[in-house]
Amino acid sequence: MKIKQQSWPISKIKTEQQSINLNPIWQRGPTWRAPRQVLLIDSILRGMDIPKVYLRRLTGVGAHKFDAVDGQQRLRAIWLFGNDDLRLEYEEVLSPIDGHPVQNLVYSELHKDLRDRFDNFEVSVAEIQQGSNDDITGLFARLQMGMPLNPAELRNAILSPIRHLVSAIATSHAFFIDSRIPEARYKRQDYASHAFAMAAYEGTKDIKAPDLKAMLREYDHTRADEALELSARVGDALNTLHEVNTIVDSRITQKWIFVDLGWLIMQRQAAGATVDATKLAACYEAFESRRRQFNSEPEALIRGRRPNAALDRHLYQYINAFRSQGGLKENLKIRNAALRAHCPDIDGRSK
Image (cartoon, rainbow, N blue to C red; front, top):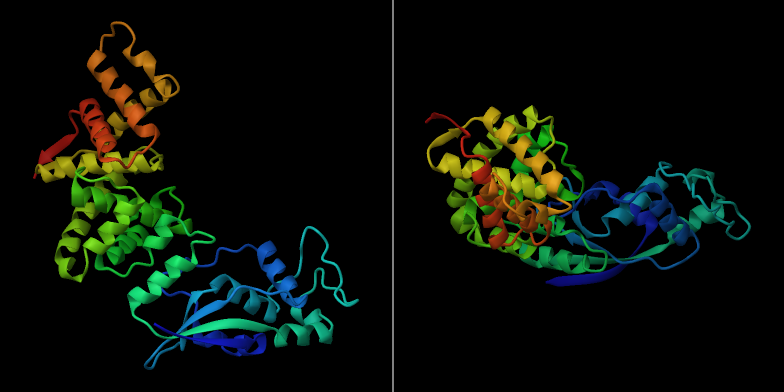
């Protein structure tokens, strides 16, 4: 990788606004709220140092000359302020600078000395002139170790066929569109990744964050056809889960409930059955109600003689396997056995 270190005045950053792509695939979109943006601008006006910006120079003809590898949030704040779209409002009044007020002002309302100071402020820019996609995504992941992206955001930086399929399902499938699972910070992509892992490994491997990352690398371009098959399995299961979620008023929001129901559906579909969404919804609601009833004291399920001792033991084991380390294969299998025991009749007509 070849990197050229430079200093750009903000005036140059402003003129390059249309040539810098803030949304390459590894980026997470705008996340800074106004108070944090205001503090960055106030720091610049006071001559304080700010972190380096990393830009990747693009080759060929296109709409952009650069991809923002790191520093996207800082660039957004600079452009917003420079375009009079960010007012310096802060809960603690910003003190004057060299006798000039800044609190509640936009760029054009500042004294000319402060506008000049802002425009002339030098930002350290590392221009990546050569580097493979793996180089860039690796650099991006390393740069985020200070203010960490969550695992789903880091996985989104991996270039692989299955990562694109995960993203496509998370952003377009009716289950996610109609669900109450938040879009923020790639949470839907995280859920979809877990579903792909269940389709790929069927409970034979852990599906914790490092395992999901390994899955994305495992299904590289040489296994694109297999990745498409997994996508079809996940899509079919989500079609049914969407029906179930509609029946239960979109209450499927907890990740391990989503994983457990999705895997149960995949198992029945792999066996050639069509899952009856109405039956599964009724089973799920009964099971979830009972789980919540005993969640704070699962030991009550195994005390003394009980009329449904086998089912109660399954529920006891489910609750314990649900509480921590939900992605371990042992806990996935325990929960799956419990759910199958509580939902023995969910099939519709045969295919």
